[in-house]
Each structure stands twice: as structure tokens, then as C-alpha cells.
Image (tube, rainbow, N blue to C red):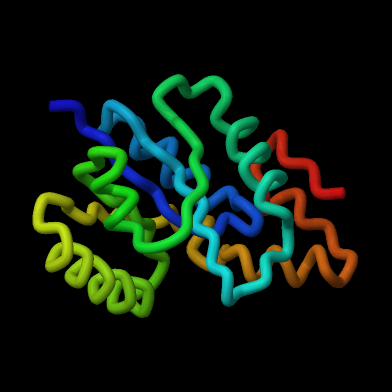
Amino acid sequence: MERIALFPGSFDPITRGHESIVRRALPLFDKIIVAIGVNEEKKSFFPLEKRKAWIETVFASAGQVEVVTYTGLTVHLCRELNVGFILRGLRTSADFEFERSIGQMNKKMLPGVETVFLLTTPEYTALNSHIVRDIIRHGGDASSFIPVGVHID
């Protein structure tokens, strides 16, 4: 059976922390699907098409990475795509508590899916998309926080 992991998020924008999680997970899975979730109740900072293009650029050389967009429950997408694993990155103990709850609910809804946590490397522990958006919104230089190939205009 092919080991397929889904890495869900808004990626608004993708950060070096996101990139690190995917690259470090590549040896663990046959395929990683980066899934950009669309939440109709939340206004995105960057257009969906731009976020998808950035992620495709970042992982262009990684043949086992695919990028999709979706609405609704992550477990529904897992079932649709025959995914066995949900990949999540953990920066802090607060992340763990939040992600554990979601992982347990996902397991209850779809018993065949396992949530796999990777710890963020120390240099990316404080990094998140919200901070990067604030830097960009206020005219700061966010280039050291986003992957090479992502050009914010």
C-alpha cells in the first residue's frame, strides 16, 4: 500500500517552516499532498491561485509532492484521495494540544487515518504565516521567512 500523507493548511503564505516540514517528511512517505484549505468564513491575504503556484514552485524538484485545494473537512479529502496519514508540524506545546484534539477527532471520524507530528526545527519555532503577513502588510522584508522562489509583490 502506498504511504500517502496530506499536509493541510492555509499557507497564507507558505513559510520556510512549512517547507522544512515537507522536505523532512519526504523520506517517510511515497507521496505528500500539500492541501490548501479554503475557509469561506476567513478572508485570505493572498489569492488561492498565488498560494498554489508558490507551493508548486517551491516543490517543483520533488516529484512526490502534489498540491491541491479543498473545502470542507480534511478527513473527507483524505477519504477521497485515499490518504492514510495527516502530516502536521508542531512548534510549541500549545500547538500540540490543539493538534492533538483535531487528530483525535479526525481519528474518530476516519479510523484508518493516522496523524503524524514532526517537530519544527529550532530556527523556525517562532515562525508562522500570521507574523509573515504582518511583516508584509507593514512594508517589512519577509524574504528570510519564506522559501526561495516565493516572490511577494
